[in-house]
Amino acid sequence: LSHVAGFCVANDVSERSWQLEKSGGQWGKGKGFDGFGPVGPWLVTPDEVPDPQNLDLWLDVNGERMQTGNSRLMIFSCAEVVARCSQVMTLEPGDLIITGTPPGVGMGFKPPRFLKVGDVVELGIGGLGRQRQQVVAA
Image 1 (cartoon, rainbow, N blue to C red):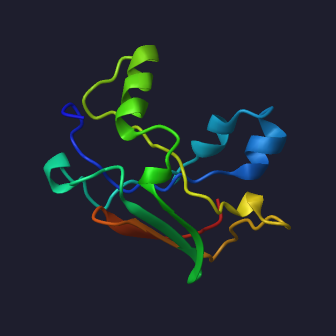
Image 2: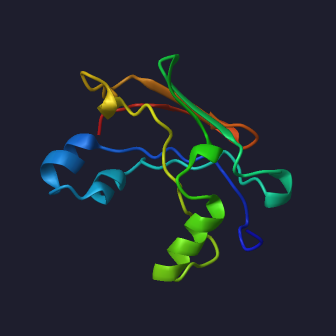
C-alpha cells in the first residue's frame, strides 16, 4: 500500500428506490445524488494507520447503533482492492476507492428501514474520524 496517500471515513449513501425501481438494478445510479458520499473529516496518512485491516467501523441512526464491523471482515484486503481496481482502470492521484459497508444496512431489515427527512446519521472508523449528517428533503 505504499502508493496509497491515506485512509478516511466515507458514507456510502444509497437511494434504494432509485436503485431498485428506476434504474434497472444499476446500483451506481443510486449513489451519485448531490450530497451523497461525504468523505472526511480528514485524510489519515498510512504511517498513522498501523493496520488498515483492523479498523472498527460503526454507524448510528438517531442514536441507535445500526451497523458495526471491522475491516478485517472485508472480502478482499485493502491491497487486493487497489490491485483489482488497477487491473481495470487507471488510478490517478486523488482517486478514492470506497471499500463497502459493514453489515446492518436498513434494506436488509424485515421490514426494511429507510432514512427519513430529519434523521441524524453518525458514523466513524477507529483512528480515522467520525461524521454526522442530517437527512434533508431533495
